Length: 368
Image 1 (spheres, rainbow, N blue to C red):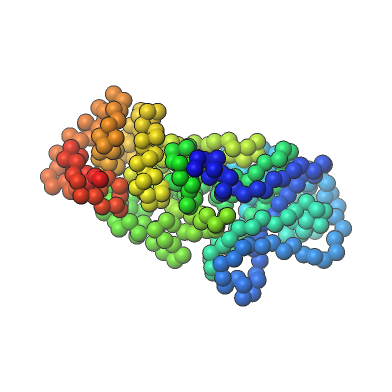
Image 2: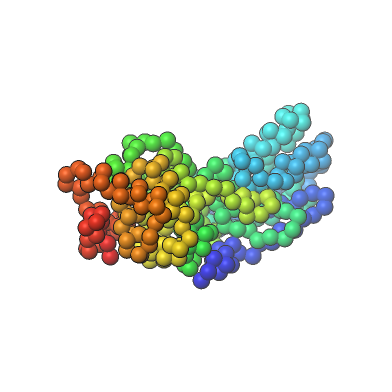
């Protein structure tokens, strides 16, 4: 399966057309379904079936302003057709203040009700975890249409959940065609300031599961929702350990913030389970070894300053018979001399959390 196959499976077949003069909107939400809220199920939006209310004064003015704000992405609003209700409510408030609309102007739920009554809204099915705080109204999705027909990319939905987040791990590998596997999970990261695991020299010794331990969490992070049976996870990552981030355009109204190819490859060594496992990791390195930007990797390693990661990189380059650039070669040699100037440097596995028996004595790394 290639990335196109992954897209076919994960995106679904939702197409949204443009309706003149008002944009098409698709609303996905979850409400209180009594006993049904206790189980995992398809999130549904049942907008009120009451008779259509009269449109409020200055509705056209408000709607024009709204469509204008959602016409193209910005650095703070990467997805302008896919938003959570929380993001949309904030946008409604900003527009009301900018236009000087009266306090009697409808709030968010009534605005969506008007869109639905006009035939401009319909539900999008997603699944939320049982008894999860992530099913709160603020996390409901609202998708606004664009002028041309286009399918919903799962990465759009993922980015809209966290507009300031960074898409990474298995999701990034698939995006960059670094795997032929269909992602079995998707990830978005919230960047944080360093915590108790402020350096990855300390973090390396921490149990793998403890990094994201807590209520509703697993080794993969916090399960936020599922889309077409694929679970989506949220994780926290130290901002100092992710220097390789870029913004990519996926449609005229949707951008994504994602780790670079080189950053993603480094992530496979430190978070192999998040990236799909051992097989996916080795496939990614073998597929990319002829077109890796080694100078970027060198810059990232110098910025991150993670000795175990440096050793793992040196070992995997040896394992796949890959010759790095002069800058990276010099950096690795200098790092090796510094690291092994200390006594009793312990052996570490090539992929964090996965045991191997063979030893790469050059880097004191356990390899397959």
